[in-house]
Length: 233
Image (cartoon, rainbow, N blue to C red):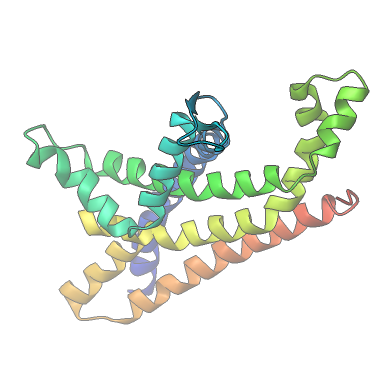
């Protein structure tokens, strides 16, 4: 029975790893796009004239891209991932469209959710770099893009590794929420033994898989931090 349970959990863990890997593959670049969108200064300036004698005219900057990105991040971060899974899977059906495949719905929900969290980490890392470094790059004849990739980027990576590591380890555990819409991941396979055989220990056994994988990720991020330790920012 032990080996039967182990092989069944390994099958479920394979789905867990698939969700984890694909989420990172798409969420990291999307998060960077959202971060740049949140920091975007593109927009229009509305001039407001003086309302009375002695009052100086002033202007108001309206940045639709930045406002939209910040609104999306606010909504995603302010609602549970479980709710987002349910809305993305069942929502199209309620609107008269065909339902997304279960795995696709899971992937879309996870990518959007983690992209928003990653975007705030990226934004915080980029904005933490003193503006004087961009000015120094200009003095050296570098464009703003060159300054970012050759001077700023390494410092940003060093600063975001710890919070990114925390979010990625959280992602490992959040993959268990896929069972909400009946995607057969690790926890789902373990729960099947409770229903069919009345066995609780397979559910507790899943902790071994999560702990081992989280431990490996912790070692990996610790190694990355040590490799970047030479770069004092």
